[in-house]
Picture 1: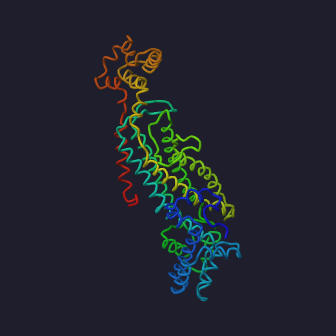
Picture 2: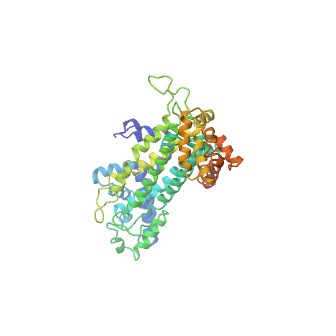
Length: 468
């Protein structure tokens, strides 16, 4: 025994995030732990035995004995056997063989190569992890964003580009962007997981061994994979085409990227000089070891930090696309870390959902920040309306007016009204158009409508996905 508790582990994912969250541990352990990997490989060995019996290669009693033994084995037994064989799949096979009658031993793993079992088991457990844990967790996060988008659909906020005040939107509109982006990533994750193929095509993918046992090896492969609700890759070598793993990793990392963007936006809005939102803070929570007054956006920063740790792993996944000829072993260690990408994505989604759930929106600060640029933000509608009514160079005219307004004490509209060259154009403005210039904080376009539409669309699309 080497590891007795989570504090013996090397990875902070194990010791702090996955290992430090009992609910997350309980949810992910059945799919992503080393014990789960062995359990799924054993399940695949049992499915193989049953498929062999279905086509008459063995009898049903033999298949049932193998499947029953596969269901009973433990990770510890396999690990102990691997110290002797120095081969994980053969260790699994030997442990199963040791628990079945002598007449059944020859049918364990018959016709298969190691990666028929490994790749099929990984496709199965990753798909089930995504469908049963990751997607529902991400759906909860999206639901939190929907609630905020709906509640703040009409709450005016100054839009920001390049870190500077731009034109007004609403806070609900800003959140609706993330509803849509995260929803798109959720659907991408579901698709990537469901496209993961399995295989039963042997050591080089040409069904060499299986052709000695079955009249139609590909039909046997379809039967075997169908019992696991998987499909076969159109063609394999010793391994399935690696792009399935690449696509799954990309779906996770790109979802993490959207989460990091949302977290960073919420972190920035908590700056002392902005203060438009505030992360919840426990009564006994400490923000600094030396500054007792500090209240830091630690949860949002944590999510961005997780993304920074995980995103570079995509490079390894891309490198795993390269396998010489019918297969080399250079993906053997690196591909084992794919489960960590799934775990980190699930953790980040849960952490971010919790952060948003307790976040306070300060409408007074939103209003005050918008008021800071009340005069300047009239520049765009003034330019557009002047051009609409025939001004030949409206952008340049308004640009000069903004400089004049900045130098003096008058608003942009007041400066424009006094400009002789613009007077005839201004007379053409409708009352509603003049109202926009007089009350530029209401110049929000379709922000509120878009926020509600996006929220409504995704509230409907999440039905059946959200955990009950």
